[in-house]
Length: 269
Image: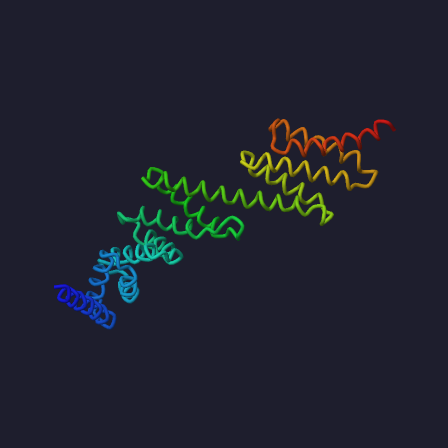
């Protein structure tokens, strides 16, 4: 009995492969389209793609082209070919503005670009592109059932861009003393705090600004030192006003004590 079942499975597989090969070589668009749709419905997306790609140039303007282009786009998506899927869905949404699949295509197209967004430490070109696509979807379909998910994706992407901006600002602080350049990190940290006033990294950014101003003052020429010490002290006040029990308080208090000792020289004079 097991041998019979095995033989039947082999025959079915051989017949299926033979049918697929014949369709690939066929000039009959209807045959290719029907078999591709069958493969799509069965979740055999790679085979569906091979057939759909053969017929897609000749399908433009035909009555069943809309369904075919949707299935091709979805097949790219299901096989994680997100660049192809993103542009295919975008093309579908633009080419079939009255389609009942247009909203879904617009969302999945934007989601493809979200999926392509890399980790925060890498170039964020695809992240900005994903945000643009998602915002376009949100503006076009404000009452969509996909809106909650679209908002979640936007939040993840904006958080990633914020983290990238913070890490850049932090790096400026870390190399300031070695580079003998304190004005650049101060400016970058100020810009970060201005661009992201509600950032979760505000405590960190305020400390790094204070730390940079502290190092700047301690490494200053005498004629500039008093002014820069006072600037550093003001930055300390901003930090503790924002969070009195800041995680940086022990280190910041030590730095403040040094600032006060230096300032006493000017008071005595």
